[in-house]
Image (cartoon, rainbow, N blue to C red; front, side, top):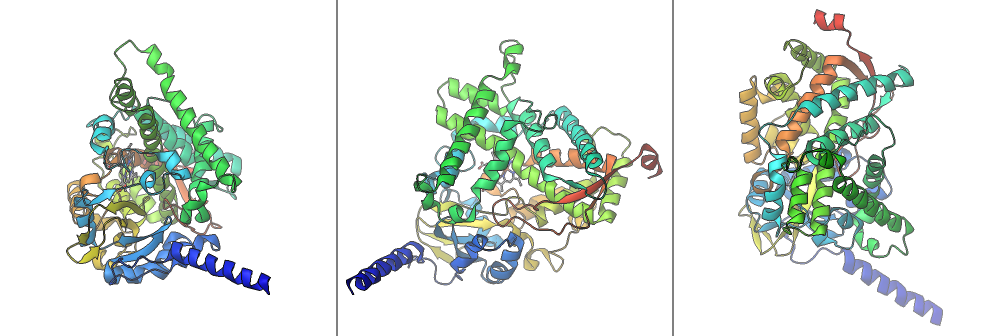
Length: 504
Ligand code: HEM
């Protein structure tokens, strides 16, 4: 009897504890639909892609109300997709302030990885931006390394195809990751990681482990568990991996042999890594801030482009018509060297990339802002202070009320006919909050120009030299959370012969 009573009390206490942890705070906006908590936890028992989860549980309420209340990374938050609300949030950074995991869950594995950096900081934003911006937003990027790495990438894909045989095709992601890290290293860190030349570069291997570790549904949704690494040994290992990445990158940048071989004072201080080093050495930033900004540059400058390229293999691999049209444009341009001047003139190439970013925005959803005071979002939704708010780019970009009845279809021609028309539409849709793959207004992406240039160059090289089809056995499966990307996309490559090039 005493045992039964004791068990009941424990059960009751546990239920109160769970209720206390997962109940929706009373002051959350009442007019907004609440997404059941199991939708956020679905990854624990199902492998549904984020497109499937969105279509089943989020699309209708979001398209109807423009915002919902959702459980995300351990708390109830407001998630927004209506352009009017999005622009209000993006324009008013002092009210909807950036607050990444270093603020929300400072003890967590992800916070140990990213720290306080140029993307997620509020207080130190001006300081960090003044240091990294010149290296991220150059008027004339050196396209030499991007062209060289893109060519090497195509060589590596063709070698992999030879080894695998036509029947098997190639799982593309591993090669894309190596390509994207190499380009990022050359362009921002003044380092050649040589991932495309050597298959087992440790810093690249660490990326694969990190990406697998960060979005584990249990720890992602209950980050409180990261407080107990002694209980969850896989989290202890996760902390170790983050530290190994931190130390490896720090060591490589600080002992970069290129610095020694250059004449004193001739180091390209506009390269982000060198600008950060100068800031560290002059006492502008601390060692911790240096490391965090270095790591975020490494991560953000390769991963988003990696995943955009990943989905490119799927979308263009299943539509030979689009691939052929792109190839025809590239082969007709009269040169095989993809300089910025050449690629920026090509309208179809531009529109294909804009459309890829619309239908498959790599940063599909982020909830990394907090209201510093009570807010009235878009003049309509009353949100209390200290509430986490965020946005879903995938949602607004496939909404038929925003993009018309063909919103869910891949149609590059929607961007217009000339490059000028396309760029004007790109700017217009961004400003009105309808097209936000790079975010908009105050905190928009600093690497947007570089990312578009890199994508144009690599696609130019790809269609110029190879044809690919999606392997008939591959069915599209998107990631269940985190960066939007296809899982395990497999393609079959064949070389475009010089004769075929002439024929086109
Ligand atoms: C396809 C590639 C890329 C996509 C889709 C992308 C997307 C984004 C998005 C959505 C944000 C806003 C994040 C937020 O609201 O918290 C952002 C911010 C940022 N991105 Fe990118 N990005 C890409 C490539 C790059 C590259 C190559 C760099 C260069 C290093 C870069 C540097 C940054 C920085 C520094 C910020 C923070 C800007 C600020 O808060 O002032 N990104 N990016």
